[in-house]
Length: 555
Ligand code: TEU
Ligand code: CA
Image 1 (cartoon, protein in one colour):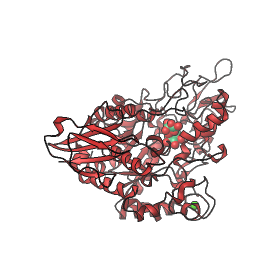
Image 2 (cartoon, helix red, strand yellow):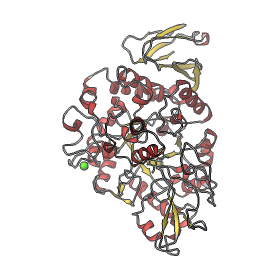
Image 3 (cartoon, helix red, strand yellow):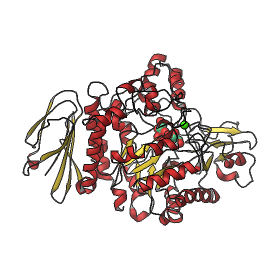
Image 4 (cartoon, helix red, strand yellow):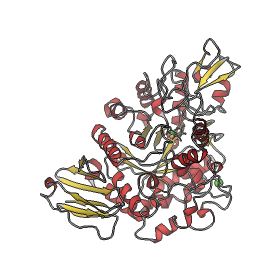
């Protein structure tokens, strides 16, 4: 991987919640333009923009109706061109979301495909005949609940949708379909975009035959990834895509690969295979799953989080490192402490994540320590998955109060509330009515305050990202755990040519003691970054850590 990619620090912009410039309550492209300097000053150098294409917005734009058109609620193509040009002028790369496992049932492709079995688009989707009794071809369930099959009378067939029924899965077995996708990719790359985050890319190759599959997590339908994740021709497709498209441009590619093991992941990113640069894996996002999968009411154990991270650091040559994104709750609420130690824990979590080997990803708002929402009514949630899951849990006999608590804890909307710019109306996001309510804590947590406070989480991120990009050790150093069995501390070293970074983070609100292995005491190490003003300056055989204290040492 070349240098600009290795030095990439990605800032995820969820445009509808970033900054609204025409007061319709929806963030827009001009809002991103307005805040480019903010992103740059943080120290990020790549923007990942989630989908802004024409879409009925059933799944907030991950249901694309026209890949080559901008959704008017976000602006125009001219706005986009300006965003791209200004980003480049400021030295920022711009990465788009490529959603090609599925698109929208409102797309021309699908509208044509569903008409009959022999037109140009007939084989662009995954159509299957019903079972003999007329029921769905298999028991496969969709990610968002219910069956993954939907019947279309015109064709007397079912089509597959791993996500919402408005998001039909594309048929990658069709050569014409693949060529249509490559054309779309070239359209954006020829404009000068700097790469793609490829949505759900581990699902594009489906099994040839759809059979009933096992039920998991108390679900009534078979788990959606059976026969769909890392399917038989996946790597052929990625290699073809690389050959025909990506290899012709100097761009970065990040695959989103749910249900992928480390050894499967290495196949995507092995440079000799010419597929992708890096992937998002999800194993560490499962540390607080339980009987209802993701929405279970379970606390994570530090040992599970640390073991998972450490395993991927060892097994994969390069990682995409994140603790949150637009599909996950806020990281400080989930893995830290979003009340008394919000600032300390947000900084410590950033430190532990950013200094691992790989590309750091920051979700908008995490740099000021935004937290989960405290909605008290299910209708305040906008995500279709939250609503479907709420109903599902109650059908399973969970009380409505408990179901609501589970949604509140894990809803994707936790990360999708408007960016908190200041303590004025709607947190400075919009003068209109925001499409989703602003988190009520904006008067205490906002960008304006963070910029004014030298000790803010924002300024800590600035130092941390600078440290990361100025240090060859942080980029290329080998990763090793320290104190791998400690119940409260996540600590590791990064080593390159005898020089080390030692990264120590406490995950508890108690004061604790950590013994440093003798092997690390031969050299003298001094503190280079910490989240308390007066952390110890030299590493010694015993150090005491205050709640959520995080310290980085170097020799
Ligand atoms: O997500 C794909 C995915 O499998 C998960 O991240 C999933 O959304 C999550 O587990 C549900 O709880 C991608 C996008 O990031 C997500 O926003 C979209 O909804 C989804 O694809 C469909 O396009
Ligand atoms: Ca707007």
